[in-house]
Image (cartoon, rainbow, N blue to C red; front, side):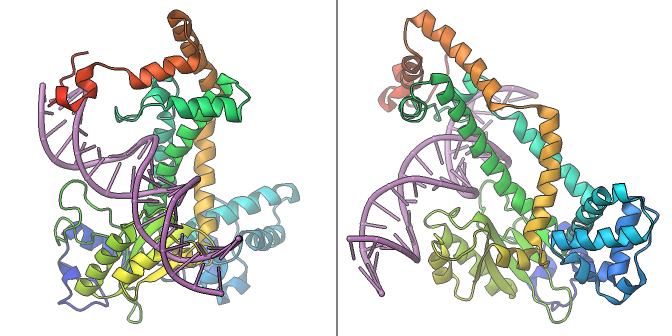
Length: 389
DNA sequence: AACTCTCGAGGCGCACGACA
DNA sequence: TGTCGTGCGCCTCGAGAGTT
């Protein structure tokens, strides 16, 4: 059994389940400066990945790898262009190659295995895009039978937003639903991707019962999304709760999450962070005070400041965008999903139904969203729902 | 195995009290 | 009186637990 480095043997973190312990241990070695001593080493790796027969210029052998890895994307492209030029690459291909090299460099800086991450993200996005609404069934009822299309919102959208145009209102409904699906996707994706970055370990909470109970074997880090084990004698064990935006946490969440973070700190030591990736100010933060009250000493971060701690790079937001853009484009090309196409098909279905019932569109939605057998609608007639349809 | 239920997550608009 | 900080409710989905 290997112990985690830079932490006392008696720290309970040494006794978390073996699989997780191994991931924590390997994260301790997974750092840019440990893999690449100099900027030249880093650039040579990128050239090799892209099968370019070019070597990094000698002067980069004197600069640490972080120098290249932390360059702003535009400056990086400029530098790479110069290097490619002096390497004798034909002028016409330099712009494109410089962009490719720079993108790859940012990915290598962020992940030890960028290809695997890109594949996983693309698969996840593909799966989610498949669930975008396509038929009238998809917008009439969510996956929970209780989530039906609101006919009053639909009427408001038709009349207030689209000058009475029903098809436009359906487009908005389809788009709104798709956006909500995307919100859910990205919220989870951020946590996953940040957890896969160098030096980090993603620690999802187990589902089901006892989600909040700390158990070294089954649930060692309740309240943390990402754990950063120390990478040298001067660094600390760090626990992060990661949110997309400051407003994501609902009332009471700050308090609950703060209590959990506090418990982790009391048990394992180290420092605790409450991060929101998107946001440029702490003003208007909905749960800052809640988390601070419950966990005095917690570090609350938004935007760049959060990315700096989570990615240990100066260009964290760019790293994430690079990955997403590559993946979204690929999935869009394959799926060909268009809100307008879906909406017009859905309106045709509604139209047939309204015609059959001799009603207007919204009227049929109103019926579908409010009518049902009494035993489905009245708890007095329904001690236990028996689906008889 | 397939379906349903349940709980908690996501983001946002809104209300309300504190404060300048 | 206007702005800010903070928490709640709404509507959505995901996924484990429970049921058939």
